[in-house]
Length: 496
Image 1 (cartoon, rainbow, N blue to C red):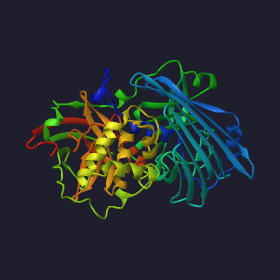
Image 2: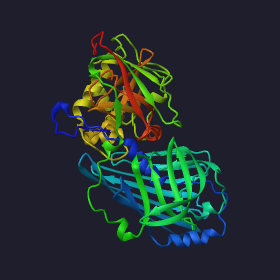
Image 3: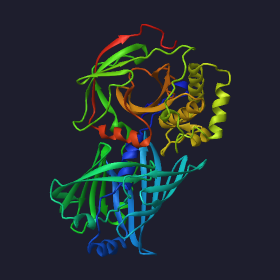
Image 4: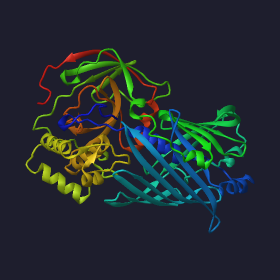
């Protein structure tokens, strides 16, 4: 997500922050979960090596921007204590944003997760999640700083957390091409997903001028691919994640030496466009030719989008009239969730206040969208967006806009989704989040960062949902190509 590189003020202010690279990075740091039947005699060596702190330098486009510190040690009750700290300095459009993440966990001797505490701190944001595992259930407590939420997630199997000491994985004597499918719990999105890991065999890798003969693994998670290289003791020597992030095993003095601001991140994940892109504000329909990765699985032929081979048509929806009613039988789009707290009394009270003069569904949507657009300072917030925190802070990027509108609209009995994909701006497409509401049996798009109902046809939707779905867009980073083909001018007033 993006804002212009030139200085802009007032209503023309447009800042979109990319949540996908962030989710992908968090996944690379925290989502290291492998199917393990039992640990063999290597267990003692894994723990012994873990007693010594190990460090991974984090690089973006060959510049060090942070580090990860890991430590394993014996704990009471025949358990293993895991300590993981990550620190980053992210260059967002020339501004440096320090980010600190902490994981404290207890694991069983089989490395099954027993309990955890996760904390994320960045400018304008702080959250803590704590959880305990009971069989296949994870009971967690989420503290957003404005609300405490208690809930339970049920997984397909007891979850694992792993570290950069993975000798147990090599003990399985995998052969090149062997694959394992694993259910896991992600403490960032507080959700479960499946991940697949494949052993690629040996590979020679150059790290800081030295050639290492390492074991290579490829991990697939929500369409994202992570590569890891392990030495014979199971220590992670190198990892690569989407969006150009690389993790290298380094001594402490080197990993913690962050020399400068690093490369600007958002421009690196924009999608260049071929063909002439007209002003989308005057269009009712447009066609694109999309080139997606061969392994990408997205349902693009939905709602206002139609797909024929690689040709995508996006059509502007007509806005329902005042007699149109909100859709019935949409429980998921009316639900309260840990990050879209539609049932919270402060959210409900604000929604009632905004819509008190409205009697129609579309009137409520217009009032809520206008209020979110006018009352949120548009600025980067590096964290997991949640509606209640956003209502308090009154600031955020497109993600905060989208979750706050979703919570307010759901509280007003308007079925609402968070959509994610790309949007055109300044000669390229950038990753973005917006909303959809269901009225008169159809989904209507809207963008509260741009004050658009419906959202213009430069919005290309790939997914809808919350963090667990939105992270899938990371599979397109650096791999999506868009060509503009034809466009039709407006035949009716955009805002009826």
